[in-house]
Image (spheres, helix red, strand yellow):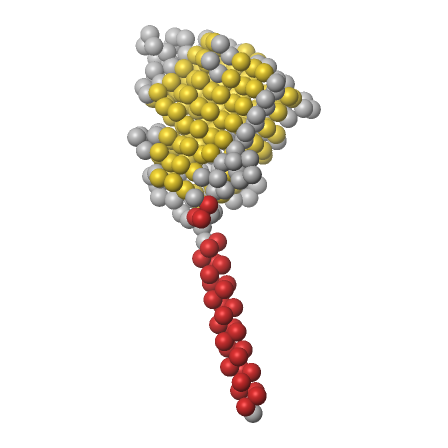
Length: 250
C-alpha cells in the first residue's frame, strides 16, 4: 500500500516537473509581436518576430535587426521604412524574412526616400515568400543609397529588388544609388527591376551590381527617360533561362 502511494506521489512530482519544462519551452518559443512603429534592436532572443499587420519605421528612427533573427511576415503585410533599417546578419548566422507558409505571400519591405538622403543596410539576409522582397521608392529630390549584400531571394512573385523613382519639375532629380553584391536570386520573375517615372532626368547613378547569381531574369530598367549613369556590372552569373546585364525599355 505504501509502495503504491509512494509511486503515485513520485508520478505527480515527475508530471509537475515535465509540465514546468514544457511551459518554459513554450515561453522561449513564443512569438514576439512587434509594435506598429518599431525602433531599437531586435535580437534572436525574441524569435520569431511575427508581423501580422503593416508596421512603419518612422522618420528619424532606426531599427537594428541582429544576426539570427527570424521575421515571419503575415499575408499581404509590409514593413514601411521612412527612417533607417539596418538588418545585418553574418555568413554563419543570417537573418530570415519569410511568410507564414511558402504560399502565404507577404508584401514587401518598402524603403522610402522623400526629399532626404538616407541610408539603410541589408546584409546576410534570406528572403522568401513575398511579392517583392525589397522595394526602394525614391520620390522628389530624394537620394536612395542602399547596400544589399550576401542575401538570398527565393520564391518571390515579382522581384528580389524592385526600385521605383518618381521625379518632379525640380532641377535636382532623384537618384537611386544601389550596391547589390554577392546575392543569389532564384524562383522569382526578375532579380532586380528598376523603373523611373515622370519629369526630368531621374537617375540610377553610381550603382554597383556584382558577384550575383541570377537563376531567372537578371536586371531590367524601364520607364520614362531613365538615365543609367556610372554603373558597374561585374562578375554576375546567370543560370538556366536567366539573363544578366541590362534590358532598357521606355
